[in-house]
Amino acid sequence: MATGQLAGEGLGREVPRPTPGSDERVMTIVEHLEELRRVLLVSLGAWLLATAVAFIFNHQLIWVLERPLREALLRTHSPFGQDVVVTSPIEGLSIPIKVAAVGGLVLSLPVLVWQLWTFVRPGLRRAERSLAFPFIFGTLFFFALGGVFAYFILPIGLSFLATFLGSNAVYLPDLGAYISFLALVVVVFGITFELPVALCVLGAAGILSSSRLRHWRKASYFVIVLAALIVTPGADPFTPTFLSLALVLLYEGSILFIAHALHH
Image (tube, rainbow, N blue to C red; front, side, top):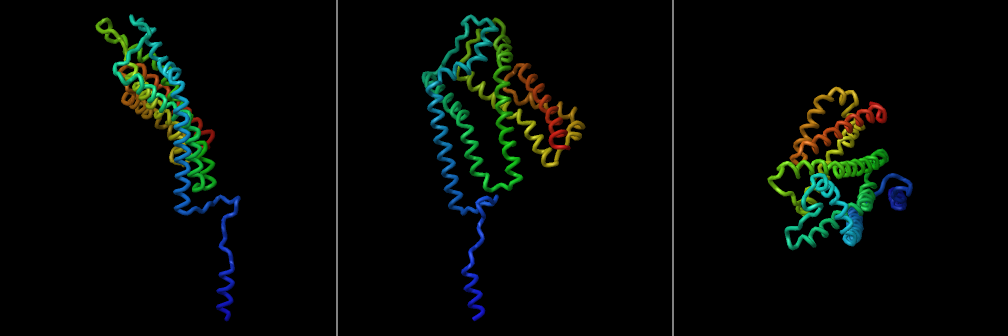
């Protein structure tokens, strides 16, 4: 009888559930898949909508992308002025589509990042959540900073490449090849500008300290210069030089940030 009463009392009790204000969120596998499906659909919709908007303004986007090349042609006094060529019959359509797709990705990036954050946030602890936002913001900021930096220093390298052969050849750049080259340079600079993010994450984890980074300064400078020479796609001496100088400044800034903000 006592056993039956205890069993009845046990069955009558409610299983404790997380309160609305708690940091824990219990989700089943099906709920995770549904949430992932929602995130993918919203992200895809945002990208398609932004791509459509970018395609409408593709002429303006291409004009902005051509600016470094036009400036380089102006510096080299090209006999064709600032004209570029299209060498394939389909590039008249394929180039605007590619530019719109990438432009749509850039325009929809805030939505994509937010959707990713809503998906991973429930699985993070409170301390991890407090670090996740600065990490995401820093990653996006320094990638954009690297891309903008590459965009504005690119005319110097292009001018050098355009005049390297002297009078032996006439420089008449292909638009499709130029945009691919520009995209590669922007991506390289954007990725390498993540150096302070990586250093600060290691500093926050206690793996690196400002004193250790100062001790490694000479070796780090050598690695930075060597990496800049390897990863830059152009054959000019100016692009890797500017990249090296920027990375050295970011390295020194990381030392100061770790020393004063992270107290290492």
